[in-house]
Length: 407
Image (cartoon, rainbow, N blue to C red; front, side, top):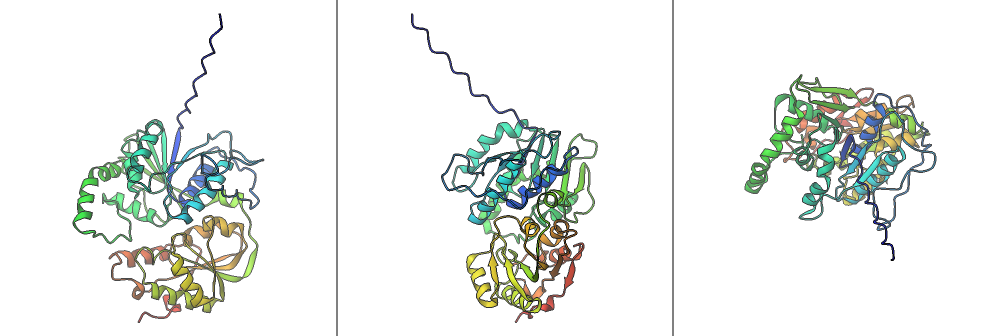
C-alpha cells in the first residue's frame, strides 16, 4: 500500500505586533524611527556612515517597500521589540521614491515594513481596510503620522489599543494639539473650506468617522487611555489624557554625519504655492531676492513642488535645483551642506536646528509678507505662518522685505 503524502504544515500567521505604525509620508516614517529610538531601553546601534539602501527596480519583487536588512545592521536594541510599520503611500512619484528609501532604513533598524496601497483605485481604500483590520484590532499601541488623514481616521474606528502615539507630519501637529484642546473639528491650517454642495455632503457623510477620531484623540485624564504626541514642534500644553515628548532627532544624529560644510548658502523650498497659500509670482520674486542677497547656489525642493515651478525658479535665479531622495533632515545631516540654510516658515525651521546641532550650520527663516498670500488662502494662514517663525528655536530671523514687495 502506497503511503499517502504528508499533509503540508500550514503557513504560520504572523503574530500580532504590539506596536503598529501607519505612515503616509517620508517625514512621518522618519519620525516613527525617531520615536522608536527614543523609547525607554533603546540603545544606539552602529552608525550608517552615510549609506542609504538603493531603490529597488520597478516590478522587481512582491514587496516594493525596499530591500531587507543589510550586513551589520539590525534592531537598535534587543530590549525594545521591533515595530510593524504600514506604509500607505500617496500617488506622487517623489513621495513614493522617498518612502521606499526610508523603508529600507527602517528595515536596517530591524523593523517590519509592509507596503499597502490604499489609493489609486475606486475600491483600493476598502481592500486596504480589509487587509489591515486584523492587525489594527490586535495592536496594543498604534503610532500614526497624520491625525488629519481621513484614511487614518477611518482606521481609528477599528482601533482597540489603549495607547495612541502621534508623531510629526510637519507644522500641522501644532494645530492638532490646539484643535483637540478646543474640541474643534480637525482641519489643516491651510484648508480654506468650500467645495460647494458636493463638499458639504461629503463632510456630512464623513462626520461620524471624524467625531470618533476626535474622541480617540481626546481621552479624559484617568480614563486608562492615553495619547502621546512626539514632536519637534512647539505644540503647547497637553490636555486630558495627552502627554508630549520632545523629538530631538537623536536617531538622525547617531546614524548620520556630521556633514561636510560648504562655503555657500542653501535655500529650502516649500509647498506654500502648491497648497494655494502663496502667489507663485511673489514666491519666485522672493526666492530670487534671497538667492542674490545670500549668494545661494542650491535650492532643495520640497517633494510636492511641481516641475514647472522648479523649472521657472531655475531659469529666473540660476540656482541648482536639488530634488532630495530622503527627508531634508537626513540629507543635511549626511552632507555636504551649506554653512547657512535659508527657509521660509516651514517644518524644517524647527527640525533642522535639532538635526544639525553642534555642526556649525546656521538656519535662517524668512518671514512671508502678507502681500504674498493668495485670495484663496485661509483666514488663519497669515497668523499661523507668523507663529511658525516666532516659535522657532536657534534660528536667525530674516525680514520679509528681503524679497521685493508685491505689485
